[in-house]
Image (cartoon, rainbow, N blue to C red):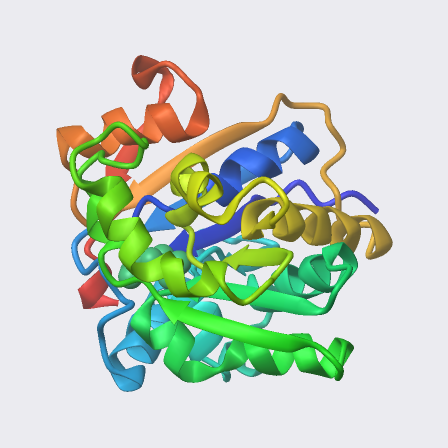
Length: 272
Ligand code: DGL
C-alpha cells in the first residue's frame, strides 16, 4: 500500500540539503520535510550528551509532522547517537552504514579514508562499520574542524581564499597512505569535492553520503511498499530553528532551485 506521508530529514544546519538533493533525484515524487537546526549548528564540536539531546528534539519535531521515516542527514548525529532507532515509532536511517557500504564496494586496495567532524572521528563509527563489512580494510581518519565554517562562509571552491591551504593541512598526510577511497563523512564536505579531489588526486574515489543514503532510503521504502502513490507532485518543505537570508541563498544553491520557490519556516526547537 502507498504511504503519502512525507519523509522526515534533519541535520544540524543546511548541510543535510546535500542529502535532500540526492533524494529528489532518486525519488522525485516524494514529499520531503527537512529540519535544519541552524540556531544550534555546529553539532560536531559539542559533547555526546548535547548532540544526543539535540538529535532527539529534532526527531520529535519531525514526528509531530507525521513523517513516515526519519533520516539523520548528519554525519555527527549518525556517528554519535546510538539510541534513536530504538525509541522512534517510524523507521530510522543514518548516513554512516550507507557510506561504509559504498566505500567497501568502491575500494580495490582496501585502504579507505574517512573525513568528518571532531565528534564523528572521535566516535570511530565509520571505522567500525567498514571493518564489520571488510575486516581486512585499513582505515585512515581525519577530523577537519575548519571545513564546516568554511562552507558556511561560502568558501568551498579551490579559488576561494585560504581554502586550498587549509585543506592541504588536513589532507597532505593522507595523500601518502595510498588510499583509493575517501568517505566525505560530513554533510558539508560534498561542496568541497573539487578542493579535496584536487589534493587527493582523481584516482581516489570520493564517497558522498547523500548519494548512498538516498539510494538506501529508496530501497527501504520500496521493499516495505511505503513509497507515495505519485498522484501529487513531489515537494520539499523546509524548517529551521533560525531563519537568515543566507540560509535561503545557500539552500537554493544546494538544491539547485530558485530561492523564490523555496519555502522555509522557523520553529522553536528547544521548547520541544
Ligand atoms: N551536519 C554536520 C555533520 O554532517 C556538520 C555540521 C556540524 O558540525 O554540525 O557532521
